[in-house]
Image (cartoon, rainbow, N blue to C red; front, side, top):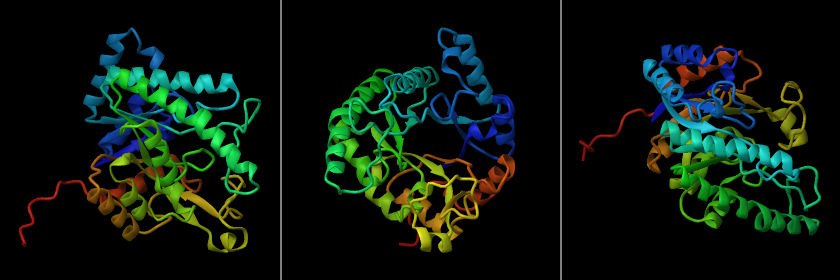
Length: 322
């Protein structure tokens, strides 16, 4: 496995400043935003199209600081019910595929997205329960008429540009939010191009045990985000885990995103990395820092120090004791 960082947290720095800083901390891979919610501050694909010198300059910059790109990220909602909004996210996805081809990157990260409840909707509609019965009808329409057709087409586009892995982050608010829905879409699209960007932080607060989810997904894990969640047991005991309060309303929320190690201890993360090894994942462990209690640099540096002691970096050797 390799220690990585998702770079939007360092948008106050130029790309070279961020790469130099991360390299000095022992980071091995970077995940760079190329559109959608992560934006394009460090890498706008259109700046590189038809400009091989600029592509070579970026490759040289990565080599200078001994870093690799683990994935390009364009998290978005390409099935948004407002067609213009959906098209913007889709265009970013296509540009990201083209950029991945130029850089030789095989993994692109996004969200599955969430449609509305009909062709005339103005906002996404995330269904969270089975009753009243029309909720089930909405789900059937979302999946069969919008989500599956879109991702079948998107997978074909990815293959055209040599991208082998579309890593969808399982995120509440979108149709793919847990291992079951991830595999449902993967099976519907066919093949192994659809997989998970496995982020435990979105699973912890749903009551999902990451180790069991890792075993369930197996080879369908394409990429990994290192982000933690702390459950506030008192608030959760009163209001449960479904929480629409602002992420900066720290005293009243049922749970908070935290830097790794501040939500769950090293034993939990040791088990997670061991489970990843068992199922054959040996890729990037990419830190996504969204801890409202820490500055970008303090949160990253604490996460990096923590992960250096918990990630399993080397390949196992022969079992000499048997």
